[in-house]
Image (cartoon, rainbow, N blue to C red; front, side, top):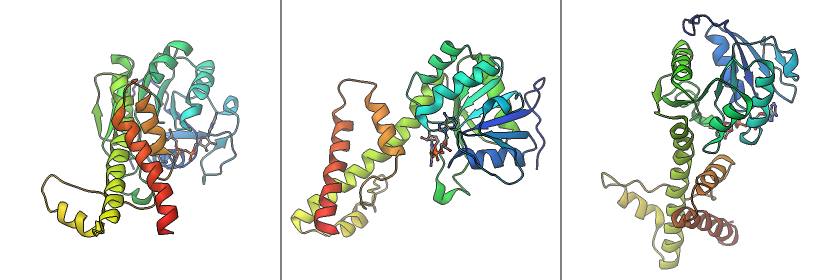
Length: 262
Ligand SMILES: NC(=O)c1ccc[n+]([C@@H]2O[C@H](COP(=O)([O-])OP(=O)(O)OC[C@H]3O[C@@H](n4cnc5c(N)ncnc54)[C@H](O)[C@@H]3O)[C@@H](O)[C@H]2O)c1
């Protein structure tokens, strides 16, 4: 276990806001690294010995707030954090639309703000959990220095982005990329079915090439993250034929799989 070494001059009390799939392991992880950590969620959550609250006003004043709520609640909780302490260091770890973090900083006067989104994979959280190579972007140089310092104390390796918008877009592009790759596999599977060609054998054959990786086509793109994030990417431009095609492909595939393969 390592004690907190960075963020000199700041009292090292940390509050994790949002204690769901992401926030709970984040809270535990920060606790294991020697910080005085508290959790806050709208819903009552009991997480071992760690103190948790359902009212932000009752959480002891913290130097650091780590935001891990659902994407659509990020602005609301940042507003609450800012009304407690505008000088606190805020790291938005939730996935957000591009432009959200700077807008929040400007609207609510948060002066020390970074975005450090997750690449968390629940089923493989040992290698793809809180500690893995992540990106970070900041609203200004000072915040970036604080952010690098904070995550160094947590031993989280980081790729520093030149702007907070690059970090925001990076996260949604990663998920949109995955979405498009899966949609391509889904379309191939339907083509194979129409032509009476074994899709699994086709994949095996294609994937022998050094730069080809055709993914599996299962039941369609499930969960909330991939559809949400490709939707965020689509918002950035009027003309997005590939993205729209991928979304439509997955919709058709889901209908098809229900009709013919259930
Ligand atoms: N689950 C994943 O594998 C994963 C991976 C990468 C990124 N993300 C991103 O992380 C963020 C959180 O995802 P999650 O899967 O942990 O969601 P989740 O639904 O499991 O947890 C969200 C938590 O936030 C709380 N919450 C919602 N509104 C709140 C408010 N106003 N005040 C206080 N608490 C509030 C909810 O009660 C809940 O406990 C999302 O932006 C998501 O896109 C998730």
